[in-house]
Amino acid sequence: MIRFFVSDDVTSLISKRKMEINSYATMLMRTDEKYIEPIFVYSYSIFESTITEILRYYLNAFPEKINKNINIGKEQLLSTSMTHDILVSYIEEYIRKYSSKTLSEYLRFFKETLDIDASLDLPLVDKISKQRNIIVHDNFKRDLLSLYINNVKAPCSNGAELLSYIRFLNEILDIISAKICSKYAEYTKEKLVRCVWNSVFSTPVLRFDDIWNFDVNGALFIKNFETIKEKVKIISSTERLFLAIIFQQFNNSINEKLFSFREIPSFVSLDNESKNKLIELINFFKYYPLFFGGEEIKK
Image 1: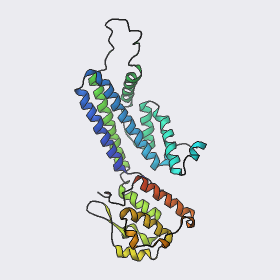
Image 2: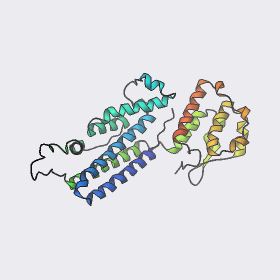
Image 3: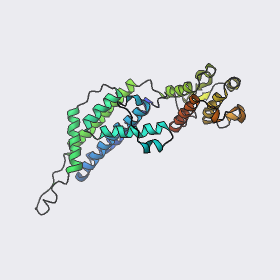
Image 4: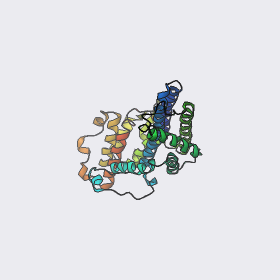
């Protein structure tokens, strides 16, 4: 199974979201009183959506971590031609069951799913979650009953306290980022492209290191074109098809020098294993279109 998971992409996402939250925290320190609560609520939502996005990404790569059987409805089954799309849809439903719970419960689920040992102050998380719910759901409580009472002013949240909550959520993201970086360090872009290549080509004739190297920018380049021309002569027609698909992403004229169309098999001639490989390859290029086309892979 090809796992579409790159740990650096997760930590980069966390870093980006932390910068967003920090910018709102800075804004909160110098903003008008009436904007304090909306800024806090939005910062909270960035934090929560970051947790959700990491879960979504992780479960797509490690679907065996879904701790129950997958039930597929008829509409869902008929609306897509690809199993992967069904999985993506189901993961959304699966996560929603847990994201609707308290934030501390959601974080417990998150830690258990990713199998990371992170020590978090969950009572404080509950306190922050409660404050968010008060602002979102009860902020205008009894406004109508107090409509004709003079000099009744709704209490305002403590700006310094909300700021400390925002900073605490960022600290949690720091902890999560460090834990993911440590536990899943092996899941690099290089591991992913090697995994894709080895999954598609089982023959020793097309060893990854015999075909590819990395330039000074960490991007893939073909080692020796003349060597490839010789190898192409002794591989199967199905392997020629897969090689043509990958090389087309690298350079749109290289295939003209390697193959003629009559050497590429028709889909009807592919066995089930080859068809499954083709689907995996299509999925890979759907999410990583430039990994064989100039993207920095190796740092």
